[in-house]
Amino acid sequence: MTDSSRATVVVCGAASWNHLITLDRLPEPVPHMQFALGDVHTLGGTSAGKALHLADLGTDSTLHALVGDDDAGRQVVAALSSAGVRFQSYPSAQTERHVNLMTPAGERVSLYVATPSEASDPTVSLMAEAIAAADIAVVDLSGIGVQLVERRRSGEVGAPIWTDLHDYDGVSAFQEPFVRAADVVFMNDDAIDDPWALMAGCLDRGPRLAVCTLGSRGAVALTASGERASVPAHPVSVVDTNGAGDAFFAGFLAASLAGASLEACLDAGARQAVVALSSEHLHPAVATSGRA
Image (cartoon, rainbow, N blue to C red; front, side):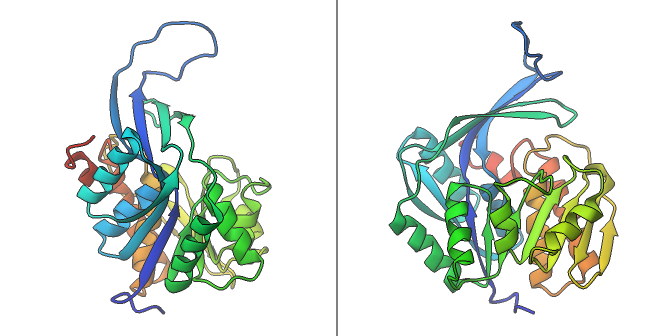
């Protein structure tokens, strides 16, 4: 077990500036006019979400991400700084930006309006060095993430990798190298009927632990040794579903570093997800940054 008082976590992946637009229903694929119920400009990105919640939980963590020298990048940096996130940025031609069309029921269409440029070899090497010096490396689905897990699979030494596969269906070619490089994998049930079979399939390729979030039905976990655990979701009045999975991930990871049981880690994740679900931002700290 890692000593949680000294454990260090690096989070590598996406940080973005997003425009969230809430609609009564997702648009149909025909020309039409539709009125928004509301909108907000705010910090986004799955890695930024994890870093925000790890900071909230007191975990010694640093976010590593590509950010451009543009207005969106300055918004990202300011929001992270104000929320108390330790952040190491790397140069990109532009900052990642999304427009998310959402409904109160949690449905979402994410439009990528800008993506980071490909990371240079020196940037990848610097991130790999950070991973080598950490106790846990969170490597998220992203272009830079692909480069980092490919280095791991080629034999490069580093911290155990935890990765978030999101809506993984068990066969996606993009997620495959992440599965094979990871020690721990997370996913949600958006694209599957049997989470236990999906998790078992992941464990067959190398990870020691798989976790699947089930939305309002809670979450389940399976270890390589066959241990199973499940917990219900915590009650919450949902404001926005963005970042709930990242909050769950952070809660689980922080509890794991503290030596909690598998079931207790799941419950800690479910409890932290409530923090994200109760805010229109990835974390309530973003709302107080003065930039959102």
